Image 1: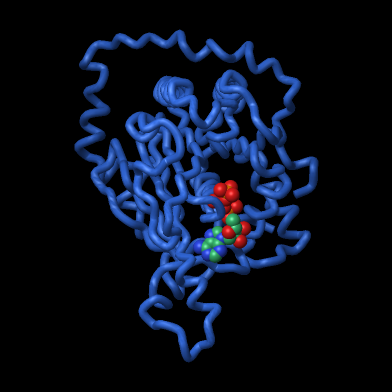
Image 2: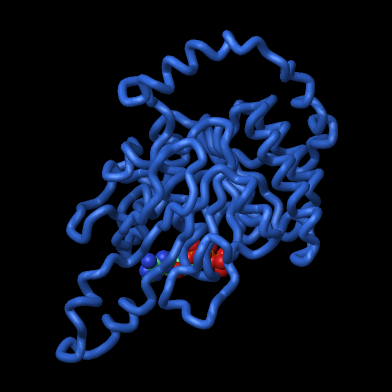
Length: 312
Ligand SMILES: Nc1ncnc2c1ncn2[C@@H]1O[C@H](COP(=O)(O)OP(=O)(O)OP(=O)(O)O)[C@@H](O)[C@H]1O
């Protein structure tokens, strides 16, 4: 990741100038303008080229469609950001342009984790890191700002990324760092409203990382009503991905082999519970296996390294 190839969006840009630019599109259309889209919808099996998650077993069930807002929520440390980075690699491989606004982690750390995932091993070679930097060119941008920003700043950056960079997938990590108090449910609701309107108007897919309320028992996945913040958040977004790490299995693996339960060891390491998919029919659970060395999430316990096609 030489600094020459890492695309950082500087904070000196006048983001406010971009704020209202997306609001001029004509919203009233003749119904017949939708005819070809309706035909596409009925022929979805053959024409669905919208982006997928990285695992082929999910292709017919889940899509990351243009113009949607997805929420990725989970308990602290359950892999929300790591999983998001993995999904982003796959999106880039599929030709999407991604921008990550990580208010909780420095770009270099986020990128180093993604590079490890792309390499499929614990310590990528310098040659691979350079190759990764070149591969991300034109595909990946980082908004370099740690700590809290304002909702207006987030909207400004989104508008800039749409107008100037043609970003198709924007990751906000996380909602808690967008300058809205945790108990200010009205502002949270308004903010999500603005994000969904922006996504709809521009076709950008917005991924919003959020925390879930920690229940008494971390060994059970939280429900969709456990997203931290206003209850309207789950009503407004299009997709809800509930990210849960199987800590019970990790604890089991730490026991002496003779005391380990086969039933628990056979369980997956990670689940994504798809609790809502407004424009898809499927809701259910995606089971994944975590490779500690590479940070890759795999579809089966014995699956080999996932290759994102990074030339090096
Ligand atoms: N399924 C898993 N099994 C074991 N370890 C995991 C798993 N998923 C993630 N981890 C580990 O947990 C760490 C934390 O992951 P990550 O930063 O993505 O969590 P997060 O949910 O975004 O946390 P936070 O809410 O604090 O931002 C990773 O560095 C990784 O080592």
